[in-house]
Amino acid sequence: MGQVESPTEDFQQSEQPLNRNGDLNKGRKPGNGFGCTLRRSVICLVLVVAVLIIVLATALAVRSCNPPVADPGLLGARCCSDGWVGYGGKCYYFSEAEGNWTYSRSNCSSLGASLAGIDSEPEMAFMLRYKGNPEHWIGLRREQELGQPWKWANGSEFNYWFPIRGGGDCTYLNDEKGVSSSRCIMTRYWICSKPDAYTKGKGRAMGEKLQI
Image (cartoon, rainbow, N blue to C red; front, side):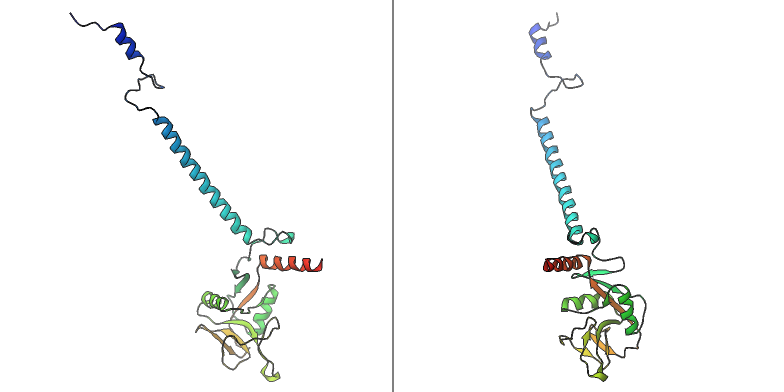
């Protein structure tokens, strides 16, 4: 005769845990579900932190190009307008047309700027690198016939911190990584410069504080 299973054995088999589908969960170690949930939580937390860091970095970058709150008329303005290049608190315009020195100065003035001045070696290096090979007028001129020294477009005298080649009255950035001079009637490209929106806003805010 065949063996008859005892009621005790049937009861022990029925005590094994069932999964959601009603199947027996055999051979699974306790705690696996909790471990998977914990790993997923950690991954989600890392992703959230990474997204927050990216958002904050972007916000700080945009804020650095905005003028201060003291000048609400400029809030939301970018550092430099389209077609201008920002560097060291200034906006630069590298012309696509050519003209003599006087025409170049007038064009810059119409754009709310002046022919570019150069205050430091890094600034000169930036302008020389960005302009490429073509020669560009800058805002340094003298009146030899009147015995006047070199002066920048803003009226300040040049302190001869870099050499100027040639014997002309108007200066330009040459194609040899330096500054030369020639007659002002020659035609060349030109470079305009003006303070960027953030720097201009700081200047206005400082002026308002001094008036108080």
